[in-house]
Length: 254
Image 1: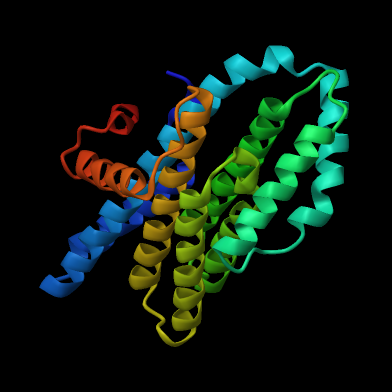
Image 2: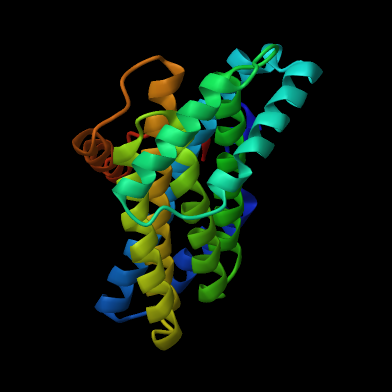
């Protein structure tokens, strides 16, 4: 099996710490909280597994097309978009305007070696790496502020850049809601020093964000319509159920 699909050492370390804590406590409430933390860690790791599978599929399709000339053209196009992507859309109207401006830029850019699909792949890869960094912080530190700040970064950057994916209004809405939730949890974490509570909250936000992003990216890869809000929520519920029932393929990597 591709080692990229295996959970990170940091995940196993966090998982083992939680198991060790569970074996030494007597309180039923604490045991229940530890079980929730273990499940939250499994859910987010399984979600990232799905995102990694998608990345490998994207690479097989895209890498042969990424010539040095295409890379240079993509860089020029992304540089051209920087002023548009510098801000954060504050509502659906601003996001729709951003989508229109990006579509106009795509239409008028003098494409020769590259195309929008290759730009979308670059965006996908950057977002994938941001999620990987976020999970490294989630598993590897007890600094609540650092974890929520990292979560906020990936959600904020993704919130405007998903406009590159086309009519991604549903994904934007979900990411915007997660960003609000993340900021609330970050503010609460300064008063609530419970590492378990904050770990569960951060893992749940990350899980939802990863699943929604992966579902949208997969639809693009397969030339399918982008998922609706109901389909995104259904996918999140199905993912959670597959982890609870231990049927998710991620468990085969353990």
